[in-house]
Structure formats: structure tokens, C-alpha cells
Image 1: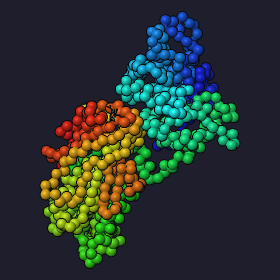
Image 2: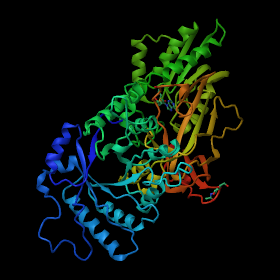
Image 3: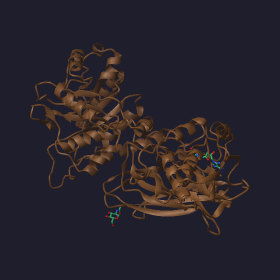
Image 4: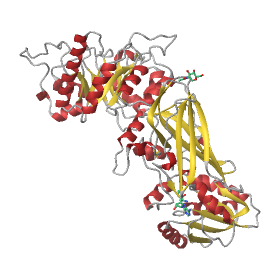
Length: 615
Ligand SMILES: C[S@@+](CC[C@H](N)C(=O)[O-])C[C@H]1O[C@@H](n2cnc3c(N)ncnc32)[C@H](O)[C@@H]1O
Ligand SMILES: *[C@@H]1O[C@H](CO)[C@@H](O)[C@H](O)[C@H]1NC(C)=O
């Protein structure tokens, strides 16, 4: 979530940038997209300006370097044709491109806006030039101008026909998803289907261009946008994007009314002041390595973060209360919290006993010696007279009696990925044969997603120990944001507790199949989980069932990347195979993806070579 709205203006050439900028500031416009070279200054490959005496563009001295970097986006000449079949035109285009990029880089511009794609050609030479420039650039970003529709070609009957996403997709694929190449999305008066708009939200949009012509006029004579446009803008406002007005100011001859309208719309976006959104804001699309809960000991900070969740413990308290209420009134129930951490579930259990009016005797088992110190202090300060603190691994502890209710929270973003199954299978040795496990079930969910942002984040991870391959065979915990989901999540692995199978096997294999609704690029798989704590009390981070525990923020989703992005088309079936493997003191996942049961990707993470969780 960005904290403020940045509005700029796309202009035709202006010689006197400083005074233009000064005037625009008064209309609350803080940056400008302006041609780098004068549009009338045509050049060709043979005579490139050298025989002219006058300057080809305004001097760099009109602004200081801060002014250039913060207020100006350079617009490349649009009269060029990179993919012309005429060699002279093509070579001219290349020369102009290089000259203008060199000038932009001399000025240290933060971004240049590059011309729209050709509607019918391959744009291959354009891609080559852009890729070369983006690979060499230090800081400059390249914003490729893409309208939602090719101009003048909107077709009511077949709106997808002239839709522009395909052109953009080919271009950036040829540029190997270069992370310096972004979209400058130009809004059109007609909007495509919601699905197509949603797909754009998974693309790296740096800028949105808003022609003044798309505004309607309200009763008072001020500019306003259609309901459809408003909805799309509210979605765009969730991302870090700059907005550029373009065209003549039809309303009152000024830009201010347009800016005011955008500011008004911005102020109506769903308030991000709830606890969950506040908590998540800094983590949007930020990759984190999943925890190693058994091999490592969690830090105090990490516990503190869990404990801030307002919903998770509430759900546990309800579940424990229900479970206790289902026991006979006069019975003293043994409640064990296994993996007690700094004690929040012990507190939940004590409160639940009061609510259910039951007497309980408790054990709090924890293997992290540092958390045990907290528990022992709490026993005194909170007068936990009926609680015994046990410093032990639950898999090896010899309990003096059996539990009626065993409470744990060993869940990861993918349910079983923090080895809850293995830990609870060990602990159930001291669960009464009619005993209850809270949670009693958890299920992981998988959905195929597009996100060049996340894929590029994985690609750019650098560290001494890890290789490119390793980074692409590791799942990441991440608050997914700039993504497009091809289909609804489907269930993958389920675990039930207690597990009374005679031979317990926690290996799993599951094959899933998703139907693609829109052409797109598959970058990886999103993982989620839900869990039944007890009865009908659940927690969920599956986007389809968030209302089972609304406002819960303890878990972000998990992202399994693909080494190579896969182009998928409407009607294709995305096949996914997922394995949970156990062996040699380790647990790991392997995954592969195919289209229509062919074209399978290499199996990722064979034998846990890149990523595993230690038992
Ligand atoms: C995700 S934390 C939950 C902590 C606390 N119950 C809460 O809800 O805030 C899981 C805890 O289980 C502990 N744990 C994990 N595996 C364990 C094992 N095999 N034996 C004992 N404790 C374990 C970890 O040290 C950690 O404190
Ligand atoms: C996959 O199968 C669907 C349905 O039969 C078909 O429409 C689509 O063209 C196929 N895609 C490929 C890449 O073969």
C-alpha cells in the first residue's frame, strides 16, 4: 500500500521545463513525462545532426540533477519504427533510440517511457534494443507504453481481439522478464473484462496514463470517471504506481480538477487502517525463507509477532472451550500444550476451562530452552498452579499420564511444512485413546499464479551459499500482492490427528489440474492452508475461505517458483504434481508443472537437493 498519490503530466515538448514544472506544482502535479528530444527534430541514420549547429534538445542545465531524477520521465521519440522492413528506417530508429537513451542516462533520469508496441508486427527488434538498454542500465527503468486497447480498434463484439496484453507478453518474454522493464498502462475509454483487468494487476505496472478524454462530466461540470473505471482505479491504488494525466484539460482549462478527482477517489479506497493491513504493508511481495522450527530455536521477536494476532488465539480458545464442554462435568481433564512457545495457548486453555466450567490439569511442553524460561516465569507471575512446565522435545518426552486434549500450533503456511505431522505423531503416544487433538486436521492448497515481480525477486536473490538453481527450488513465505491467479486454489495434502494408522506414512503425492481462463505466464505456485481446530472452529489462509478466521495475520502464503516461466493459453490445463518426501532425517517437497499432460517442467528440488526441513 503506498501512502500517497503521485500525479504527473505527460506533455508534448516543452523548452522551458522549470517554469512548466512550477506552474504544474500549483495544480498539484509533481512530475512530468516529456520528450527527450524535440519531436520535430527528425534525424536519419545517415545525417544524425552532426552537421547542425544548434542544440538538438534543451540543455541539461535547466534543472539540477535532483530535479531531473525526481521530476522528469523522459519520453522517447515515437515517430521511429524499430521493426520496419525498410533498412534505412530501422537503422534510423536504432540510432535515435541509442542517442536518446544515452541522453537520459546522462541526465540520470529515473525512468524513460518507450513507444507503444506495433499492433501487428513481432516487435522483435524493439525487444532486442530494449533488452540491451535494460541490461546495461544502472538505475534507469524502462516503461513500455501499453494501451488497454490498440487505438481506434475497440470491437464491442470481440473485445479480446485487439487486446494488447499479448504484445507486451511477447516483448518481455523476449527480454527474459528483465526486472528493469515495466508497463506504463494507458487507460482507454472502453475497458476490457474484469478477468483481463485482473491479469494486468499481476504485471509490473510502474505508471498509469490517464487521457483527459476518458473523463465524464458530472452535474456540476467537473470531471469524473465511469463506475467501471473507478473500480479498476481502486484496485490499481493498492499498488505502487504513478499516475500521469495526458491531453488537453477540457474541464475548466486546468489540470487541477482532474487531480482533485483522483485525490477524491484515492481517499475512498478501503481504509487500510485495520490491524491486518497495517501489519502486512511492509511485507507485500517480500520473500522470506520459511522457518526451520525444529532445527532452529525461534527468537523472542518471532514469538512476539505471532502473539499479536487477534484472531488465531480467539479461535483456539473457542475450540478448546468446545472440546472441554464436550467432556463430563465432574471429570478433571488433562490438557497438554505441545510446543507451548511463550505460553499464549496455555492462557487460552486456562480461559477456556473457566468458560466451560471445567477443572483441568495442564502440561506445557516446549523444546526451545529460551522459551522455557518465559514459561517458568509466567507460571509464577500468572499463578499457573495447575500447569507443569516440561522442557523437552514432544517426540521423546515420557509423560507420567495421558492427555485428554492435546493443543498445538506447529503449522506453517503450507500446513504441514513445519513438520506438525511428525511432531504430533510422536506426541500422540501420550494422548489418551479417546483423546482430542486440536487441531484435528489441516489441508494445504495450491493455485497456479503469474507474477513477474516475484519471479524476478527470486532471480535477483544473491548469496554466497546459494546458487540460482537453489533459489528456484526453494519455497518462500510471502505476502502475495502483485499476482494473477489462473484458477481457484485446490486442496493438496491433508493430515488428521491423532493418526491411528498401524503404519504411519507422512509421504504424500498429489496431482492437480487447473483450467486456464486467460492467456498468461505461469511463474509458480501459491500455497495456502486451512485447519479444523475442533468441531466447526477453523483457521484459514486460503483466499477462498478467509471468512473462517477473518483478520488473522499469523501466516503469509508460500510461493513455489518455477525455474522457467511457462506460457499458458486459455483452455489449457495446468497440471501440477506435488510430492512430500521423507527420509534421511529430512522432509522436503518436489514439484513439477505441465500443460495438458505434456511439456512437463523438470522436477524441482529432486531429493531435497536445494531445500529441506530437518527433523
Ligand atoms: C509456531 S510456535 C507456536 C508457539 C505458541 N504455541 C503460539 O501459538 O504462539 C511452535 C512452537 O513449538 C515448539 N516446538 C516445535 N517442535 C517441537 C517439538 N518437537 N517438541 C517441543 N516443542 C516443539 C517450537 O519451539 C515453538 O516454540
Ligand atoms: C490443451 O487442451 C485444451 C482442451 O482440449 C485445448 O483447447 C488446448 O488447445 C490444448 N493446449 C495445448 C497447448 O495443446
